[in-house]
Image (cartoon, rainbow, N blue to C red; front, side, top):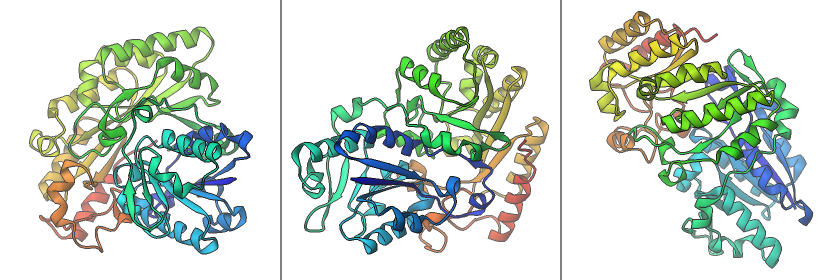
Length: 434
């Protein structure tokens, strides 16, 4: 049995410029699960067109997989469906499965004739359970879908249904990724100017309740940290100097910070030192400011902080749950610790010219050099999506490929769209991403 794992990408300006190219971590985790079935004759191959180049459909033609697994963000929905259609045109017998963060929250986006199943909850556990049942019982997959937890599937009558997640799936610990693909392609991986940056996942979901954020909905909305020893074992085996911790919010509590400091000191005693990039909330930086400097001494060189907005009214509208003064405090604390800050800002389709000017003035007055600006893009499942759903009816604006935070998915209310884009890109070009 041969499985082809494909990382799918949407198409936008940033996908052409590609300032950030990462390893396909979710596919490397799947590869680790699949490795447990190698004695049953299962083999797999990862393909990421950003790292290998070439034509995805040509790769599919060459590999002729028995199972095609597709993963991508919301911007890749149309690409995923196109590849599924191509796979079924090649062979009606190929099983086409979809997973990833968008499939987890919006499996119905893939309820199309060319897709057979969508892993929407505890996907790694569900995949393992499905394959185990197949090899032990010798049954074809369509007869096993309805007993696989956390799966949306098309039954033999062509009707879509889904199974509930299981307790075992929720308790399943993430496997250590199979990083052979990273090793083969790491010379092409970059985070802006830094090369060979490995990804590390140390927790699932997010403990905070920002109303615009999709990440907090993942893992069924339950925040769960991985066991520290599992994380340390993975860290020891990563052949990269720079680690990008991709938890939605790494800096959460004093207890977690203390545990990491102790763990990193232990690794240093073993001669293992890494440089780290991690995400944090502004109020967490303020509340745990003493740990920011201590973590800096142990390799935490950069913090990516979602400041989002600089006025209390805007932050309340986003349901961020913090005050504007926290943002100013976080900028100062990270600077004083000797770490880099990359600030993330949002502009709304309802912003006025004065709102843009105030944001630009705040960035300059606080000396923020590295930042990105995104357009508020409500994602399905979030509270903010429900607030804006009626304004996102125009299919020309609200196509999945446009949900890249660089496009308007609804019409602006305070200025023409062309002027909004002009102000947006003018503000964005002021960033100094070095």
